[in-house]
Length: 256
Image 1 (cartoon, helix red, strand yellow):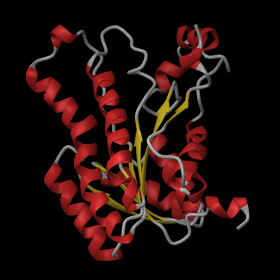
Image 2 (image 1 turned 180 degrees about the vertical axis):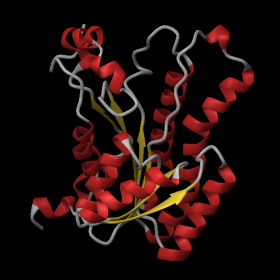
Image 3 (image 1 turned 60 degrees about the vertical axis):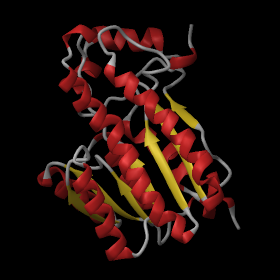
Image 4 (image 1 turned 90 degrees about the vertical axis):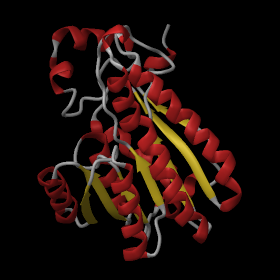
C-alpha cells in the first residue's frame, strides 16, 4: 500500500465532540477531507449546522447531533443512535473542554464537579460506550484533545489542568485495556492556538510578545495546524501508536 493511502479514512465513521468550531471543527474537516463520514456534536444547533454546511460544501460527508457531553444520558443515547444508523463507530475524538480561570479557593464543590464532569467524566463515559462498538468490529481509534496545561501550569487555573491530566491517564489506561481488541488510544496536547475562544487573547499585544518569547516558533498556532496530528492518529498510518500524547505546541513545553 502506498504510504499516503494509509492516511485515508474512506468509509470510516467518526464522532468529534465540540466539532462546530475551533480545533474540533478543523479536526472534523480533516477527517471529512480524508473520506470519513463525520458526526459533530455541540450544544448549539445553529453553530453545528453552519459547520456541517461548510464541510459538505467542501465535498465532505457530515451531520450534526445536538447534546451536552456533560449529560451522560444524552451521550449514551447518541452513541446508541450512531450504532443503529451506521452499525459501527470507528473514530471518537473527545475534544470538548470548559475552562474557568479563578483561584482554587474561589471554587465551590459544585463548580469543581461541573468542570470535571464536562472535561473528564464525559470523555470517560463516551469512550467506554464507543469502545464497546469498536471492539465488536475489532477496530477503533480513541483520541482525546488534552493540553500542555497540566504538565505545565499557570496560577489561578487549577481545575482545567487537573482534568486534562486525567484525560492523559484515561487514554493510557484505555491503550492497555483495549489494545488486544484492535483499538488504539492516544491524545493530542495543543499549546497556544488562536481559535475563536482565544481570539481576543491572540490579538493582545502582551500575549503576542509572550508567544514570541515563550514559543520557539514565536507565534500562536493556527487552528488548522491541529488537523495533521489528528488525522495521523485516526488513520492506519498510526496503527502501532498506542498510549501516546502527541504535543502540538510549537515547542513551548520544552523551552526553559
